[in-house]
Image 1 (cartoon, one colour):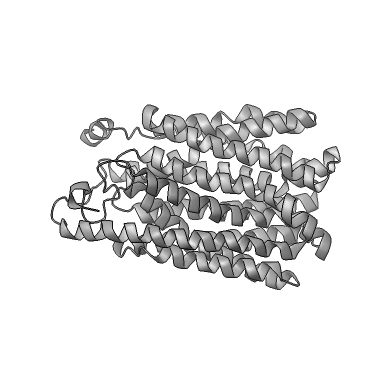
Image 2 (tube, rainbow, N blue to C red):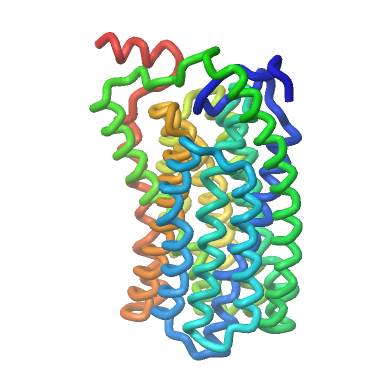
Length: 412
């Protein structure tokens, strides 16, 4: 890395003159491996429920512990990284995931399962804020595209995880989870190489520290706070719905249509694959048409598909699930980049907050829907959750943060 490629100093996240695709694809690959590992946990639920006799409430608690450990630390990791970047923390965090996988493969009961998923969650907390920061550093100004390449890796991993679980873990049992430790080891080695590039960029920045001041938001503080509040509600509606899908869609298909565990995993894979494709689509659209409109379209636009899902046959149910995943997935990259545009000097902290909310609200949603399923039925929770995307209407009140628009807002 030479001074010629450096565009900014201090904590400014975009530091390369051109989009560094090798780094983006590498960090996206690591995100794929990380989230593939994480997606093994909900894909294991039918097996764990049968083996240990867990209730739906206990399944929800497992998800809650995993999601909370995946979320609580993220804003603090991001805030620390904004002030003191640690290039090799990415590889170190993956070691927590590796330890959690080995423990989960041999966990004899509920307590050790909770500890195992907590270790995997801690690895996720370290990974996401710094990895999102790396993606924006390598964006060359195409921030939505960079965030989407990073995010589509994670969504792709989430889609592949249940498929691999159906092919490897379900036939061979809980101990087969240990094979996923190889993916964690591969990710740790790749993240060490990314850390070397990251360290080189930081060294170049230090040599040019006086070249440019840290960016600041052009919007009034009250507008920023209002917009952040709206984005939090968007994350709530998106990930409460997604928690119901990822944790209980397989149970819903088994209960309503009599599918086998493996068949239900293939249907979950179809939903998660569409989710991954939608993420990449959202990145292209966000840079071209504005992130506000992508957010509005992606969440509110999914509502007709989600609303119809509980009232149609098997084929149409899977089709509606795929379409809702494709549309609603495009929101997250746009939300993260939109939020960092609001607070451009705090990219790590903002990424940590929103990734933390994603996991935390997903965990709370899973626990809530698990309790509700025990109290009512699996069919009932799907009829309730499918109304959540309607909350996307509040995106109309987001300010436009495209260049030129923010200066007009500041002058008003």
